[in-house]
Image 1 (cartoon, rainbow, N blue to C red):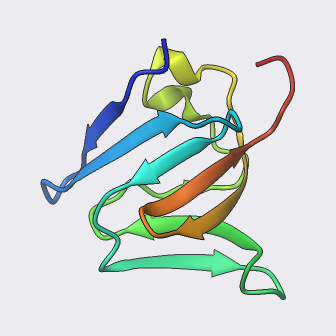
Image 2 (image 1 turned 180 degrees about the vertical axis):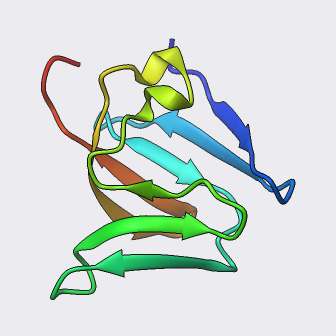
Image 3 (image 1 turned 30 degrees about the vertical axis):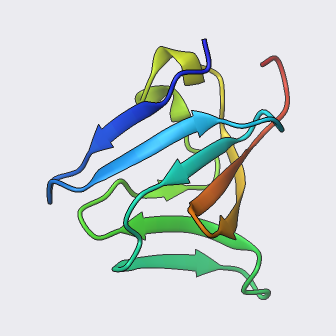
Length: 93
């Protein structure tokens, strides 16, 4: 399938989710006002929370957004020019 999923948060902002060539999920949208958490290393991001949501932490089940993402759990995040690449745990997908 590999369609682009649109999610509208409680502030009316739209975020797009799409499986990329690495079988991770590209999360695009307006991240001007957001927060993120990390461990000792700021590149080791453990959660991302744009203003108005959605709050996505490690081990989150991305199937909440689409059946296409069933059994896809968050292993990490990589910040990029379009938002974040959500790294997926690679088992049984």
